[in-house]
Length: 438
Image 1 (cartoon, rainbow, N blue to C red):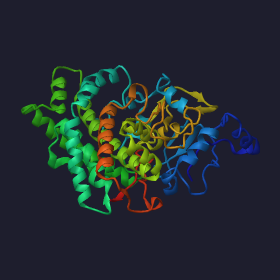
Image 2: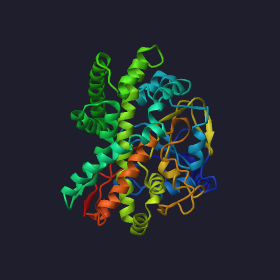
Image 3: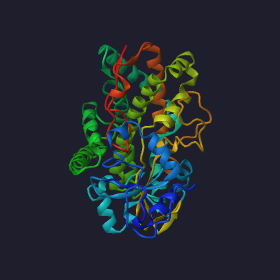
Image 4: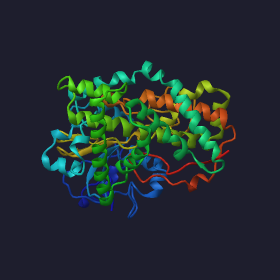
């Protein structure tokens, strides 16, 4: 059985009354556990009905269990989950936590990261300053608003071409397969210098990287990592021999100038840019379009006023963002959060979707409002680990939404919303397919 916030069995009714207190937590004096009343028997965070609509659960967690202990039922690993907006903001500034696996004891590192290749784990999301500061500075110039804006004509052309292919399928065309995921793959691949014929391979590898936790998925992930590493090694060697005007060549040039970017960091950085940019934007487009189609008044409002498209994209990121759970952080020392005692080296994650529905931060948080302002969501993360590719994802989404509004004025879902299948991952949120009719 999966476990959320847990405590001593012998505290009985006193524990239950304390759980209902205004802080919604309790002080655990021992490590003996009992199942949380949040879940029914056999239910987990990965259950299909929870994946389809996790928001009622997250609302209760924010109110009663803001620091909840999660047990992965398949891998048997535990982590603490934070769901309040203020906690998401504060944890990134809390020096008592680290995201760097190399700062963990070997036993802890093996338990959480043993299945991952070290050569793909030294990127911006898995290092702390000063390494993070050094690495981010090397690639941030490629993602400035000015550089990204220069890509507008090319992104518009790609969107137009993909849209023609989608329309050619007529009723039942899968928006995700034909538009939402090909778009970011093409854009980031061109930016990095990946040949067009290799793009489909990244989709297969990325599916393995974001598969729900299981022993079978773990083996497929390991195999995907190995194939990805081998492929990148070949690309790097080609660029060393024949540099081009692309980001991989630029990163290699920096790496060869000294020790500012190690071989592991070079591989991990390209891995993060390819996988992160692809998955984030694809799910942002799919989730965002689904939200518009399920809120026809807001869709009509956007059709009548295209100036609302930027704010609509921000609302998509808040209301139905592409990521749920953050990367793992680890406590450097024993500490207490909302009455919960977290031991040194225990894992902690924040839930972006839950935080972005926090009524303490957002007025009417469960209402989809394309004109919402202010909208200080955390759909792209927060602090030093804020998504590097956020300007690119915003531009792609804005261009795509505008073209969809212009060229598909009668678009609608080709199936009932309740029949849509949601991906089983609790990290990357999105539907399996999104069939449209025109």
